[in-house]
Structure formats: structure tokens, C-alpha cells
Length: 237
Image (cartoon, rainbow, N blue to C red; front, side, top):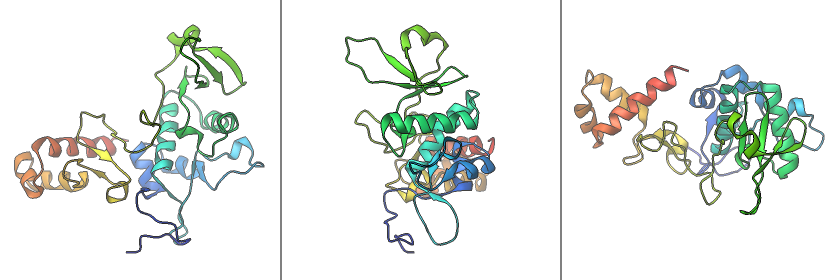
């Protein structure tokens, strides 16, 4: 297969996902994701049409294709939806954050928090100063310490160096990772690189014998069990 998209951009190291694939991974309805994935916003793009994730690749099939970064933007949106925030508010928050941060992809650059009613963008401050945030609905600055009890934990997709490299959807203690540098961002066992779908299929073929399934790929029993758990988690969406 070609490792370039229709415009000649490399597909290596970026992750490649269709809208249905991305929706399944972040556990959102396909119809909702279809509506919030769009082209690059311009200065004239109104808030109600601001894309949550940008369709950055063109494979020539007429489909919207997003990268790993787009997947992580959708994951942030999914966390906000889970907290009860509506799509119009998420779009408006993304629009406002793009203005504050001056970034095309604000959801993967900022630290976001919510109280279930609005979305806050945490601001970087010197250590000696109180932590502050911007309420993205009215652009008012607030002290995080004052409203801390009403806030959910921060939604962050970057590592300590500010990079968006890998995603452990079930947490770092589970052997399931999405890494854009490996198998185009498909969910895999981080040790062997075997797709979780393959490990789960082997588990079923061996009638629930994790040890036998592990031998198919030289994986660990834990890798098989985590893969099965992950595939079941996906199917519950």
C-alpha cells in the first residue's frame, strides 16, 4: 500500500482513522463525530461550525480521515460530553480556546476542566501566584482554588514534555496502547505490537484459554486478558 495520502503527505507516524473507527475508539455516536469533524477553520468560521477535530488527510475515497491528534481531540470532547456538556458548548469552548491559545488544535494544547455546566481553560501561572482559569463561555477569569470542589479533574492528552505521543485508553496499568508510530495507531499490545483485536480473536478461538491464545503470538497472558477487556469495553459504547 502507499504510505502517502492523495496530497502527498506521509501517513507514517500520524495514525489514520476513519470517522466510524474514531467514534468507536472514543465511544461517541458516529453521527455526532461526523458532524464535528471538519476542514481547517478560518478566521471567518463561526463558533457553531468550529471543528472539534480537523480532517487532515485525504486518501481519495471521499471520507473524512483524521490523525492521532484528531483522535485525541475527540477524546477530550468525549470526556466533556460524559460530564454533561452539550456539543454546542464544546464547539464554542473550542472556538474560544483557539482564540486564547492561538492554536489550530486547542483541545490537544490546553488543560480543560468542567463543572458540568461550563468549560474552563487552565492558565499557566508562576508558582507563587494563585492558579487561574478562563470560563470559556463568558471569557471571565476565575481562581481555580475557589471553585476546585465543583470541578472535575483536568482533561490533558500531553505528556510532561508537551507531546501527544501515545494513548492508554484503559490506563497505564493495562497492556493496551494506541501509538501513531506503530501500526498506524491501531490498538495493540505495547510489548509485542500485536493488535488487541487479534489477541481477542485468539482468546475466542481457544474457547477462553488465555495461555493458549498467548502462545499464538508470543504474548503474555496479561496481554491477552487486557486485550479481551479492551475489546469488550469498546463494544459497550
